[in-house]
Image 1 (cartoon, rainbow, N blue to C red):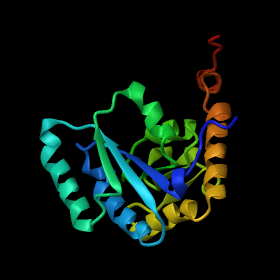
Image 2: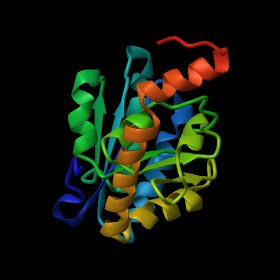
Image 3: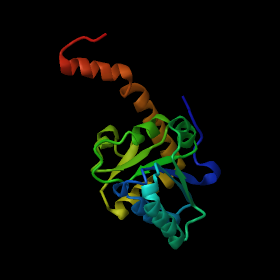
Length: 195
């Protein structure tokens, strides 16, 4: 079933979710990639993240960097979003990008997929195994801006590819990552029947 509409006004709306308390989420790399993508095609970037008083200095440096890059009108920062409000955030974006490195396993890419967003993660993100490269997302080289820009442009160049990948992501979550599937694998691993 079609859950959403893509590319409002012909602009790909990119979503990044990463705590402002964790530089390994690679906020600055995401901004550099956004600047490069904007040379080719119109996009917007929303950066959503958890903020604390201790992270204010880091957040300020991100804001200053956005201004330095000259992309203040294309980037929006939102902090401390209530989890119950994240559904509307996901539904108002087209592509999820998380360039973080050494990520044990990110939940946010799977959440994004459940709302029909193709996802881009790095080859050091534990969630990479949940993504079929080019079918419902892309896996990029950690810390490599060229790899990241190419992956974003892959989805920006053709709205049909973006929508098809988003629908593949949505279908995968609905069929392969369900509670029933989890229970089956847990029972198999434990050698017991739990239901």
